Amino acid sequence: MVTLKLAYKNIIGAGLRTWLNVVVLSFSFVLIIWTQGLYKGMNQQASRAMKEMELGGGQFWHPEYDPYDPLTLEDSHGPIPEELQVLIDKGEAVPILITSATIYPDGRFQTVQLKGILPEQSILGLPTGSLRNGQELPVLIGTRMAKSANLDIGDYFTIRWRDARGVFDAIDGKVVNIFRTTVGAVDRGQIWVPIDRLREMLGMPGEGTIVVIGKDTVVPEKAGDWVFRNLDYLLREIAEVIRTKKVGASIMYALLLSMALLAIFDTQVLSLFRRRKEMGTLMALGMTRGMLIRIFTLEGAFHGILAVLVGAVYGVPLLIWFEKNGWPLPDYADDFGMALGNTLYPIYGAWLVIGTTLLILLAVTIVSFLPTRRIAKLKPTDALRGKIS
Amino acid sequence: MDKAAIITVENVYKSFPMGTGEFTALKEVNLTFGEGEFTGIVGPSGSGKTTLLNIIGSLDVPTKGKAIVMGRNINDLTQKEAADLRNRYLGFIFQTYNLLPVYNVYENVELPLLLLGMPSKERDTAIRQALDWVGLSDKIESRPAQLSGGECQRVAIARAMVKKPKIVLADEPTANLDAKNSHHILRTMEALNRELGTTFIFATHDEKVIRYLRRKVSLEDGKVVADQSMKTQ
Ligand SMILES: Nc1ncnc2c1ncn2[C@@H]1O[C@H](COP(=O)(O)OP(=O)(O)O)[C@@H](O)[C@H]1O
Ligand SMILES: [Mg+2]
Image (cartoon, rainbow over the protein chains, first blue to last red):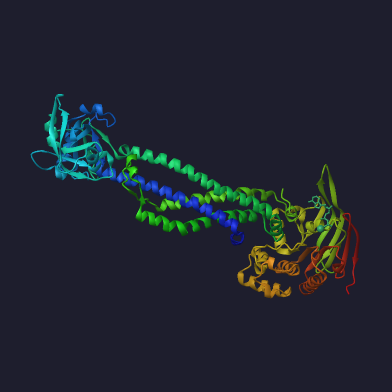
């Protein structure tokens, strides 16, 4: 195609200005893919960790259970519905009984959630196997809890709770294991004990607060009056956080992208103005206005293609390196409540790259086309005289 | 008139809007040009030479009257048809050469052939021949900025001639050239006119050009005041 060849020649011949536009455009291109991949990785990494340690394939909740209102915890327990007990017996679900308690490590006191779980379970990634022992009350905690209560493996500490009838009681627990996880929700302020012992302590035989379903288990349609919470519901907060972050980021790259697009628009306007005589000459040689519009639009669009190529030159190795080695997160990132650990692994899917590329090429083409519309009214004689209407 | 008429200008008027009124650049122009002519439209600056060439070249239309080029009435052509007419039958040479700066000599000459959709092998033959006519075979790779004015105008002649058009319209082709270069390009055009039978129409007020003409149409204030056959030396 003649127009394609001419446009290519022109853009390469235009030199420094072209490359300036191309480099700015390629920055925004790589940055968009970079941040999108970062958020995608963030979402997947946090969701995966939470599914593994906390959520499983979804949860059935006692109808009164409300994780945001600790005061309801006393009422939110009941016998496990039969449909769920079947799954539990097959090892496809695990019951958890939750109550609040106070602990007294080193004589200080601290309010915690006391959680009873089946030691034999394999639904969640918690090392509950260590709870299968002994005379004393075995206790499993995470590293954050261990640090805040200053506890170590083998330490004893006092736990005080109220049983089903509202009577206070106390017992000494022994830390049998400390686990490390990125999911703060199963660690911070949480004390894990065997569910049978907790049921005994509370006087709630056979009861539970929630039942976590295995990730490959078929979810029963009904389980008494217990409410099923699927993963979309349980993960909605992360989704919301990431959505907010994405909006913030898109403002940043919308700004960068519009700067790049504005520069291209400006280049187009300038080049149409400076090259009137060239347009007149091309018309005298037999070119139609349509062809001129195509050439000038293509010239602008080439910025986008070059930006994609230039962006690929430094972007591909950069993105691959980060996908492999991850993005180190500072220690305080844990306090944001996202289960990410200390390295974030971005994910750059094919659709993310292809979609962004197409979007940018489209935007560049539109921006390049807009100023060329004035060619449609251009008279060859005016163009040859260096005039433009 | 040498042979069959390929351009007829009948009672042509051309006015341009100017301030509140209008300015009439051509008045009652009647002319016929035959195949193989070597004709100059001669007159002082502002007499309407360029305006007339533009109408013949289908770059502009008359305000009144009609111009028929290669059997087509310029008034009736759409933008695309006019482009097609120029593409096939017309070559232009400008005072300021109007070469495209990002293309080298070869590519500048190639342009009209690309627009004609000629296959690349034929194109190459035609380009080399055209550059041979103007004596620039050794400057194929040069860019316009690396050439002298005379060389640029020779590239422009090659670009106009490469598709062997019926008509070449040359607007003050020697105005920016010194005497030596002017004679050189005029002799080149004269030879091409003889060999290929191409009709050449010049707009000029350059005495050096007038000496080569076989017909001289004199224009004054937009009117044809004389139309003479000339004796070539
Ligand atoms: N597009 C135009 N608009 C207004 N006036 C024009 C235009 N083109 C030419 N003219 C006027 O018409 C007259 C003839 O111009 P032109 O044909 O260029 O003369 P020449 O080529 O003989 O010097 C001049 O006075 C010029 O100013
Ligand atoms: Mg003129």
